[in-house]
Amino acid sequence: MVISGYLSSIITTLERRFDLTSRQVGYLYSSLEVTAVLSTAGFSFLDGRKHNRPRIIGICGFILGFGFLLFALPHWLSGAYRPTADSSGVERSALCDRRLNLSDLLSSGGSLPPAFSSQRLCAESETTLKFGDNSISTDYTVALPLFCLAMSLVGLGTSPLHVLAPTFLWDNLSERHFSNAFSTTGLFYSAAALGPACGFIAGAAFLQVYIDHPTRPPSSLTTYNAAWLGAWWMGMLVFGGLAFITSSPAVAFPRRLPAQPCTPPLLDSSTETTLVGRSFGSLVNPRICGVSTTIPAPLPQLPLN
Image (cartoon, rainbow, N blue to C red; front, side):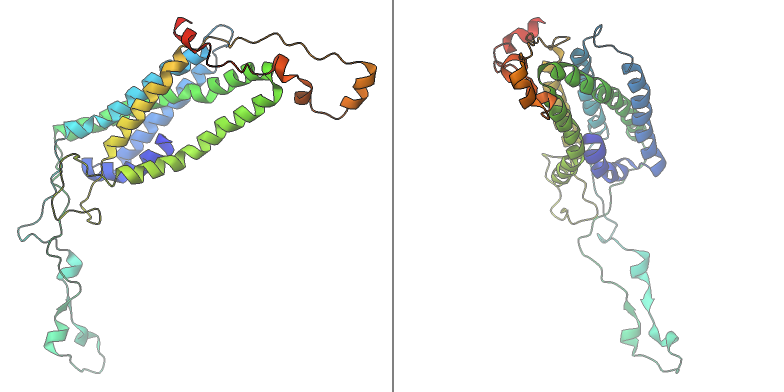
C-alpha cells in the first residue's frame, strides 16, 4: 500500500521540496529493494517448529513503523516551505517573452498592423508564485541519507510478510479446516493487490493539505498553483502509527495456534458410496476439526504467551 501506491504519489513532491534528481530517487527504491531481497533470503530459512513466526512478523512490523516515521523526519529538519515570487511578483517564462511577428512569415510581403504584430504569446498572471528557494543546504543533504535509511528499514520490515505469513496461515488452517486454508490465503494476497489502489487514494487526499499544516498557506497559493506542495509527511505518520498498532497483537501470538484434536467421521459401507465425488474439505466435520468459535476468550491470554 505505502510502497507501490502512496510513495509513488508523493515522489514528485519530494523531488520539488528537496531538489532530488531522478538518480537520487533511484537510490531510494534501490535501498528498499536490495534490503528486501537480502532479508527475504534470510527469513526463508526460519523454521516454524523452532521459531515463533508471528513474533518475528510483529517485531519487523515495529521496524516498519519506525521506518515510516523516520521517512517523515526530513520535513521538520528542512524548515518551513516558502514559495517566492520575482521582483515584480509575476512569474515569467521564455515563451511569454517572445513577440508574435507574423509579417515575417507572409510570403506576399504584406504587413500586419503594428499593434497585432507585437502581441505577446501569452498573458501574464498577476499572482503567480514560483517554487521556494530550495538551495542545497545542510538540511537537504541530510534528507537523502535519511530517506535511504528509512527505505532500508521498510524493506526489512515487509520481508517476513512474503515468506512467513503465508506459511503460518497454511500450517494452522490446513489442520482445522482444509477449505479455509485456500480462502484465507486468497484474502491475504487480495489485500496485497488492493493496497496500491488505497495508497494512491490516500496520497491524493494528503496532498490536498498544505505542506506546513497547520500553518495556513499564502492567500495567493492554492492547490491549482504550480508552487503548491502537499503534506506528504502526514501519510507516513498515519501509516507508521497503524504499523505499530497492528504489530502489537502479532508479537503476542504463540508459535503455533492451539488446535483441537481432529477426529475424522466414521464411515461404513452404507455411507461410503454416498460420499463419492465430494471434496476433502466437505468430509471434515467443522464442529470437530473446524475453527473454534470462542475466539474472544483467549485474547486476554495473548500477553502471557
